Length: 131
Image (cartoon, rainbow, N blue to C red):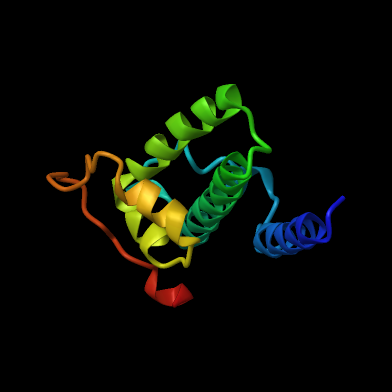
């Protein structure tokens, strides 16, 4: 493995472990995506926010792999659809806005149709307790 790829893989694994270490793995708190935002407890919202950070981190990594030809067109097609789905999670858009991405990935995502511009969904922002 080339040194740069080894460093990327190590960095990604470290970030992934950091993200996953924030979870409380009790069964009633893990599956928060199916619970409406307004019905979630503060800890469930925190978990959902952290999961959104994880989704963006993984997706950015997949985008980078596609850019350097390590991800096939077929797999990128699936990831591209997934990216658009995450971009359309309007009430968690601020999670994307709060991260730093490689410029090409940020430009790609910001170039997607913005179905949140006229959204009636409130942007609740970060839970004050966790700021």
